[in-house]
Image 1 (cartoon, rainbow, N blue to C red):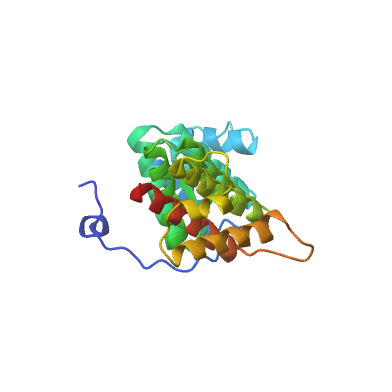
Image 2: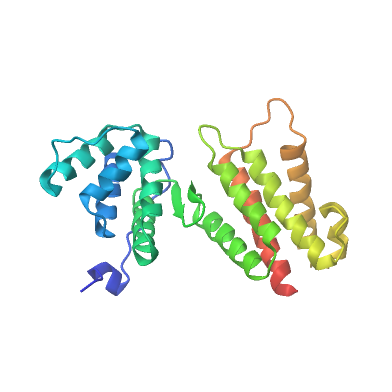
Length: 259
């Protein structure tokens, strides 16, 4: 039987609030190796990845898979810097192929959600910022819809927004807002068949129902004031950046579907 009881019957634990970003708790350090093993990697294969990321030589005295090499892997994961744990997870995922890679991704993302860890593993982007559930859904749906309709430039802007908000130690929240608005502007130009106009001039041509048109105009104004024309002392928070990116994604999807 390949599926667990909870998977077969659809039971999932409630997701706690995100409380962990710049840390790798013990549960995660343990799970990275265990999830890689579950996906089909032997301890020696996991050790190869761990040692290559950490630039440490494998212990030549450890030659048996269990318990020697497995314990060595566990010790290295327990002892390394927190951000290296995420580097190792990304490298392990790239080592796997097809269904094994999917299993590793799904199990690791499940752990992130269960433990309140604000990161998410994606197939092509690696580990990226995970915000609230609406934020995650909005960005994922937007990238999927934009890509499916051939709007690759707009999809690329959303990916750049995710990269910017994922940056550490200092997230580029203004960059995330700028890229999300650029994606919306790209979609608006395509829908209105006006490639040379800015979003502000495009809004009256989009035929948005009221008061959605006013909301989008205010969103554009907020992005222009707080993200493009930055003033000393103004600091954007993650919540504000998530809100702008989510709304820009939602409006982009609306314009695509209505078209």
